[in-house]
Amino acid sequence: MADQASRLREQMSLWLKAQQLGREVGAQDVGREAGFLSAPVFAIMSGKGGVGKSNLCVNLALAFAEDVMRVLVIDADAGFADVEILFDSTPILTLCDVVAGASIEEALLAPRPHVDVLAGGSGRFFDEIGEDGWGRLWDGIARVSARYAWVLVDCAPGVHALAERILRQGANPICVVTPEPTAITDGYALLKWMRVKELGVEPWLVVNRAKSKTEADDTAARLVDAAAKFLHMRVIYAGWIRDDPALVKSVMARRPLLQHVPGSPAAVGYRQLARWIQKRAHSLGRGVGGEGAAR
Ligand SMILES: Nc1ncnc2c1ncn2[C@@H]1O[C@H](COP(=O)(O)OP(=O)(O)OP(=O)(O)O)[C@@H](O)[C@H]1O
Ligand SMILES: [Mg+2]
Image 1: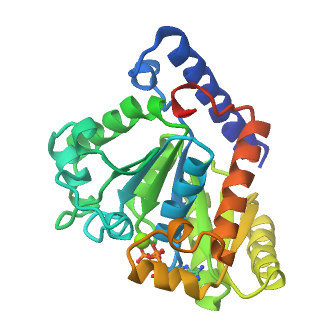
Image 2: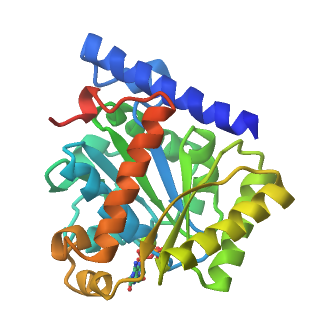
């Protein structure tokens, strides 16, 4: 457990160093040259599908952008791309094209101020991506990461090679569950997979669609306790989002909740979570200045 915490702390301090270096030399390529990512990368994951990952990514990105921080959202659920739909934007190039050799810079969409998106595309699946394609994608992400304060990767549900790759490259998992027993069981299975694979991560946990704080806290406690007891794994409860009919309406309107109904309970929850992430990152030794700060 100490290893997991120190690994995250080490990453945060590397990111800080990379941002400082980026400021000093003015290099966009600093992440790649230094051999690591120059912004914190979060993999938004779940065991069960449909628990709210894509909406979390999109609205967290907007919450960071409201605080004038630049964010990159990567839709890594290739074949079932959702992020572009939630932003109601139409990509010309996607992650699949980057895998095939297109430049990531050309593929990026800018659906909102301070928010860039690498759309997922469709018709190609991650199991089909070979070492070369993966290398091209990761090189691109590392290269552009210096421009952002945060990188959020919207992952496909369940366990897959892509998640394993990005976690091994230093991304931090944010696991999303709902209070439903199936989502909790699948969430536990996801944590177990991380343990069995010895990924050395300290996952953060978000409870989505809770009816009350008590329900969210109880759900989180079950997973945090089970992970500690049976997996000897530290899971950090990051926060919760209320089950909110306004979110369903925002999806139907193809307009992210933070813009569609900015004062709704779930919107408030997304903002609180964004603040928690900033505070936690600061306490782990990472600032939010450098290229990522759009101020
Ligand atoms: N906080 C919430 N309140 C109410 N409904 C929600 C909430 N979060 C998600 N939903 C509902 O769940 C649906 C699925 O959300 P979303 O697409 O974000 O899930 P996902 O985890 O990305 O799904 P997938 O695993 O298929 O990628 C939304 O369209 C909405 O109807
Ligand atoms: Mg999704």
